[in-house]
Amino acid sequence: MQCIDRIADLRRAVKAARQDGRKIGLVPTMGALHRGHAALIAQAAEDSCFTVVSIFINPAQFGPNEDLDLYPRTLERDLQVAAEAGADLVFAPVAAEIYPSGFNTWVEVGGSLTDCLCGAFRPGHFRGVATIVLKLFNMTDPDQAYFGEKDYQQLQVVRRFVQDLNLPLKIMPVPTVREADGLAMSSRNKYLSPEERSVAPWLYKALRAAAEAATSGEGDIHAIRCHALEIIASQPALQLEYLEIVDSESLQPLHELCPGAVMLAAARLGNTRLIDNIKLI
Ligand code: PAF
Image: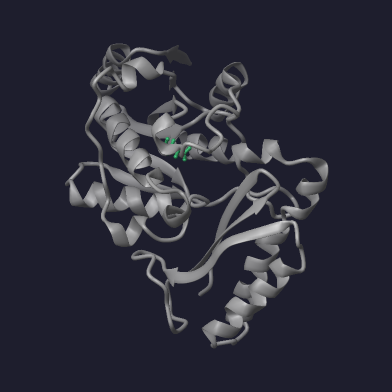
């Protein structure tokens, strides 16, 4: 597995792989790789792609009071995880190459997908995500790009601009990977104290209870939501930001349970922000 930090070298490596008849698969990450990332990389490799993993902590998607400075930086270990999962190349650029001085062009996906849910609590976040992801697509020119379903709103935002801008690539969603107790894998789980770590799985417990109620016949969307809210309220350390039942594509709130209903939630636990989601039916 090669590791490079220059855009020109990335383009050269991708061109050579393409000349060898390989399909290109991109797994964009911010590093601190865990089993969730390994599943994305393994899926790209299994799909016979020349698998490129980008590692770049993108300052543009962090708000002024967020955790940019604290975000875990573990490049050596990341290279090991990427290689073991089947990556062919890691692209770990420095910020100056990605955002040259005078940088002033942004990708803004329209309001209804980005103002709600995480977007309401993290203004500008999805603009930062869409901009870096489009830049990575332009640098790598992948046939397929892999995103985890844990970041569900991000996945829909990326799908939207890929369609809107006629980008010739396929977005490949990969199911959330969880710890044994249900907690969704996240690089930010490293921030949790042992006490917080024991509370963290309750977010998913609440989502699962809602999904179980929906599949066992509870049709009242309000009752399903209240059930999940009660479970979260039983853990005072979990400070809920939002818990909504929305349409899986438009992310607009649903008033009746219907196929494609997804419950999305975010909560603060100490200094850590947790997000998770579940399909209801
Ligand atoms: O999901 C992430 O880690 C990031 O938002 C992404 C897609 C790598 C863009 O920086």
